[in-house]
Length: 239
Picture 1 (cartoon, rainbow, N blue to C red):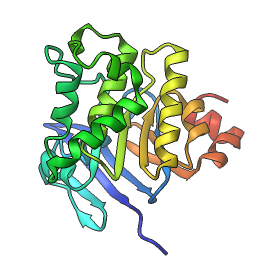
Picture 2: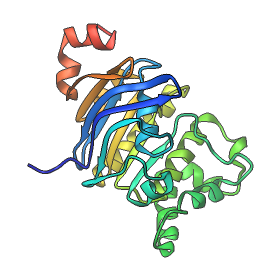
Picture 3: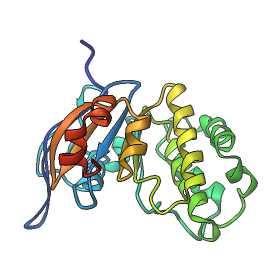
């Protein structure tokens, strides 16, 4: 059996005396879309930030491409092929669209690929191409989400993590964004998706893990979770 691209076992993250997550386990198979589900405060963002090296891991293991990465710097982790498009975008708002994208390519070993990657992002998000000289801080929420995803793609990741990409966006913008994620998946990109929009996430995912109060309580195929009334009622609150 092929080892998963990403495997997390019994992850625990603390903020001083506070526990962010205390027992999260999940797997992301190569070439799949995996949804990380749960209500606000369930631990989705903490889990993604820990994987990305943005916050320290108290205990547990994170294995990416067969290598333990817990404790490594965020820069080193990006260089290994794992990128995060964070909740709230975290853009350089005084910088232009293109400068934000180029900053996303900072970890690349092969700087000659920057032009190719820029062209790829502009093909995926034509609005960014139109506004490449515009300051990021003057863009709409949907455009900022495009830019955050585009910046993550500039590191040429093997695994793209998306934290609440639909949050606060108009339905038409969300539909367009998810169409783009589908295109990326068809091109071979593996995706780990944290979403509060459960129905949407299950629709586009192959597998899902449900978090409740910092603990993974259920994992399975997205189809099984979507079609099980009891799971919907008890774990997802939508039944």
